[in-house]
Length: 356
Image (tube, rainbow, N blue to C red):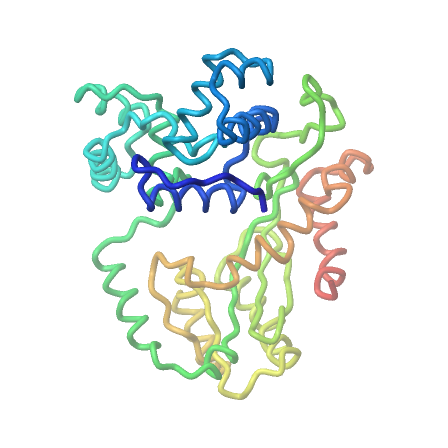
């Protein structure tokens, strides 16, 4: 704790004196150098012994005006330390701040440049970065808008009905739900972000770029499933999937997955409303094979947990983040078309991914 000299003064209120003491004892305010404080304290010591300005000036080698200023500060504020400073007053008045908050609340897509022009119209001139900082202090931060499916009134009503129907379902119900979906894997996909380290002017070196080709360089469709107890089976879809192909995938993968995941006899199959899933023949097949399905509202991909699994856990991340990435193997492989190579790679990797 630093020692400071505080004296009683008619010009110094008790509250202000306490503020100064608290500031210095907490270490929030520091002098740029200790020399002025040391000299100032010596000036006060000599002054308190009864010496005048001239004698103090001669004894310490300081200009008389400096001695006078130090003593004046000490008599007024009770200290020779640097006082807390308020800093430059903000240009954004409380009224201007309210205007900013009202505008971005009314239209969240308003840019900081537009807000800058709006303030200029009321004679408040500030940089747009100042506006962003002020909004940030009020809990308003810039961000990229989320993309979500366009919902009609019918979709919204169906979503609400689904939520109300399953609001009180026990945890056991969801733990015995088998979530299913299909996804596309591209050889040169862009679904995963990549980062690298490099100096300036090295961004386009061959070892740091990610090659791109039209239409993703080939792709394959994959069907997968999972439950609360873990991931189920994965299947590569050969060619174009229709109702017959979909039924074949269900026949070969659903019940084995249910057994592997040890779901109860009351398990439920979740699938979206793809025409191949809801066709008459598929509905009859599901009924014949006694597979109970979970009714599903349209335009609700965010409700299906497997959507996150595709991106965070399995194939897409596996192929794009593998070291080296799958496209490197493709470049080094024998002459093989993109789709054919990718089909082979996915097939060979399924067992590895399931056990990862």
